[in-house]
Length: 623
Ligand SMILES: [Zn+2]
Image (tube, rainbow, N blue to C red; front, side):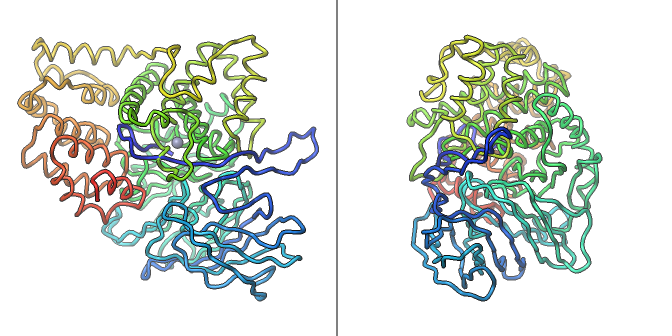
């Protein structure tokens, strides 16, 4: 996923453990041993779901999904119960082996974070269970959007967001990342809309609103995803393409033009793309993340459509998850850095391969600054700055900080410098092959790292310190970018009054340079100086969402405002629901004496946000 909080200390993520490793061809299949996952009620070592057949109807009037989830299960002979995770669902009945033989079930109340434990009684011969259910208005994974919240403004839209533990709010499921399963689905939607899933998708609307899906590779529950809207498809290559509303499809196709190139370079780096098809769906602006790496079908925010491909590093990120995250998956949310740290490293390697080293260096320096801000935000909770987390009893979302992403990246980048890039690449390629379609804990990874990279090359490296200690070890690699050094020199001149603002605006800078410039505007610059800068550079009127976000943050910090800017900020906050963006702006308002103003805007904007975003902002603004 990309990306959540940069400067905030609020969030967390995750927690369970061990191992669902596909055996190498040479060894005989060994029974999977699942670890305890404190974020799931499932007891997979006793009875586990292996395949889901989902049969649901999407009702836009009632804003619910209803239907049945049938699981093929495996259980120990003596086991008489199976446990599923549910949250804010109504369970109508449960049947065994077919749709007729009802069985007893019991809902054991859990808590606000985890939801409830659906315990189903199993007869001896049970090989399948079917749960008849419907969602409710409290279902957090779903966001039903009104036509006016879409690009086309004519039809409603629905999307799901499963990570970290929200799939249980729209499907009763054993919601632990280590419980991988295959699925197929029948989804009924209004006939004028199209349904697509993280599965094999059609490319056209059906005549009757019925859609059929198969996902034949076993995936973690958080990666099951559905989007429904007035969508069209445009292929980009024989195995890539984009789904979007009609008014967006051409711009999206242009923006994502390089995706085939990215896959080719990614495969050269770390081996075959295992998911056959790679498509991107452009969602309405309320989507809470930059992107979500749902297999075969990345969900993306429209805020990355900048018109100049300047923000497509996000596509490289989500694509990289096809290896790190989807192919080799964190076993527990405490191991989230294995998903995200590797993905940021891989993302920048793809960007370097496609657009050159200078570009990748800029991204790394900007990421390093994110990390510093992240560390600052977590200074009172140093345990949250360890790569391996302990999120027991907390919402796994709390772990979605820059630690997993950028400290994870910095660890791998420092390791790369130590072992040399050829060794690093051989190691990573082997790692993705060895653990393909399985889940992995931090401990298992460290054993593999020692056995396959460090020991054979006689390399000593402070891995334990990086993974289990707070903060950043002293041997961290220093990341530099000549292009961003130029930016810092301009800022220095500006501060000293040695450069005119016109000259600053005339620099032939990339988007990343502009972002770096804005983020690093010193506190000594006055509101009047910002006004003069804005008069020439027109940052307030930018159409680039990333620039808008960092600019509005500075505007608020420097107390530079007028009617036009206030309106722009308000429009941004009431249109966009991307958590990273809006939380940055609300946080700036809060920290600069404008809490009441922030609350006033939020009151209007909240209905446009997904629950992932409202959970964060509710907390931040003390609501
Ligand atoms: Zn990610």
